[in-house]
Image 1 (spheres, rainbow, N blue to C red):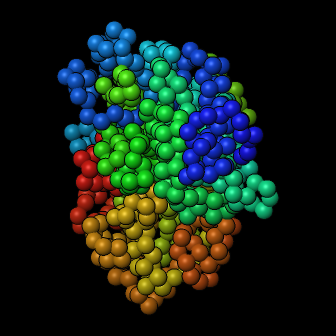
Image 2: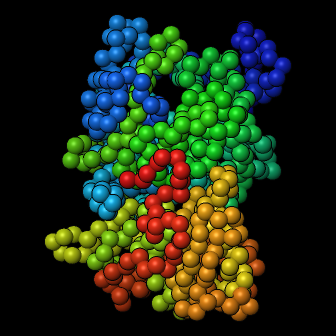
Image 3: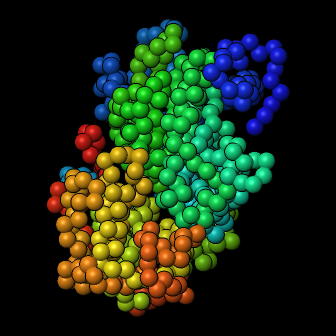
Length: 604
């Protein structure tokens, strides 16, 4: 990115020898764009990620922290004496993330009194009404932000390569959008078309062009954004997961390079704090709670107020305090939205309230315009996506970290079709639950729901490995899930399987977690070869399958995973999958719901 540097610019950044010329030019361009945007859009309603504030310091705000009514909390902040007298200003940030193209209200999973409870939540039509309602409470001083993984995860999204989702998000009126790790699923060119199709400003400071043209080395998106709100200057810096090329099929990231946030975050914080004179600085990240908490403890982020996180679908009902910043995450699937209200007086935070709010269709009536837009967008795909391919008697759930009924069903189908020694399914996070109707005792599994379970219809692939390879690979997968170094966590849950049993100790050191493995009910023979089937990852070497390297006799099986599931349901519907103890741990329950422990956080 290059601009003609203004000779009239007298800001300190343009005269600091520690700031490169390219960064000065970028600073000038973004600063001027921010000022023009402020003039052009003054008074316009906004939104951005609502994450936030630490422990509330005033009694009134403390009482509000435990009240689920957003209007009450907002009113309590309005009662701040300085706000009433016009000496202080209040900003409101609203944040969604990991919507995964879940367009309709759906069953959502909660834990109440230690047991699973399901409630109807989400839907873009209710989300829009909710956002408009909350935005109107502080109309001139609200921003809306989405933290990524938006245009992947449903049938309409997959079949349109995200294009059908973009106008729907534009209709809500987001202000800032961050690409997530799944935004790369359709390849670089389609990602750019979809992301740049958003009306909202895009930010990401660690995704670069890695091409053989004049774009090589340039950032794909602007790294930061500066906004004037309620007389307060606010800076936002974006970061996608630097591990995206390892987490996703390698081909998805062709032409892109990702870097760690600590490589440049201190420079951007300096630009925003010292030269832009921002009074608040936020990192908008899509890295997962473990990585985000690790980042909050790095000295490079000193000067950041909040890390507005995403990716691992965690439901933070109060921020987690790191050494240098607070961290939040707002759940997933459009079922939740985070809200942060901050009162500032003379550049100092005087009050703050953070909430995680349910997108409750009973409370927020569906917006009719959004319903029409969704219906029109779905029309070309409606017949196929609404086709019922089977039924389930038990809830299909994917929230558990170690083993899930949903993935037991998927691996049951793989085992039935191909009869290997072991059937594998990746530790995916996405897909809301599907709960049987009490009146009928079953729930319809549609093609659309199949896309939500498996949003990439990969071909099945078979290979053979020794028991020793299998053991070492499982140790690696457990490290990917539970690494004590947050930067080494790849973001998924424990790998799923059929035909095998594994017991492990989460708290052990890397490479020493697995206690035993059984295949076909017998202890694994380290010298024996075992056959296994998993999905092909586009771009992997032929001898790599499900991140397992050195696979012998690899070959594609001529069936996609969707076809396997449909064939299985044609024979076995209705299904009744449950957790069977295929994977267990000695030091955490089989119902574990988060990878992040020891921080006082509980998923519920």
